[in-house]
Image (cartoon, rainbow, N blue to C red):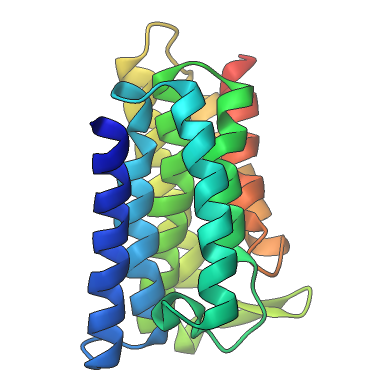
Length: 208
């Protein structure tokens, strides 16, 4: 039951984003990040009601779904970005790959939320308030507002995890992980940061 419900929720979010894009309720970037933030945040808590094998199965299914959607232009809202990106396929792959790094529900959640919330909010606030503080790094554009948003959100997520987990996290560890995650988000292009950032956070937390 939970497996099917999970699919339905993600599909519903994709449909809402597509309708919003077609009716011009929001622009291309906001439409993509609507799915990025809400779907990613929902998926982050899958381990609390799905098995690890079920999550891996859904990850493969979503990768196939992204490929089909891109080929036949089904969900144009999430494929409408003008720059080349593999963000959607990396998103789907990360969902499954994280299950091989950790079986801790908390680590899985906080690692995936780095992608959905920290990266998602960075893109939204950066596109809205980052025009006057933009900079270029390795050929792609970033903004001080977007990067600051990422770091602040990442710090909040890691602090929350540290307070709720049995192991806990020291302040230097929280700051260090957040800064390195932000650096990875800055330097890795083409949406591959959707893969690199959560896997980095998951690996570090799983080995502390």
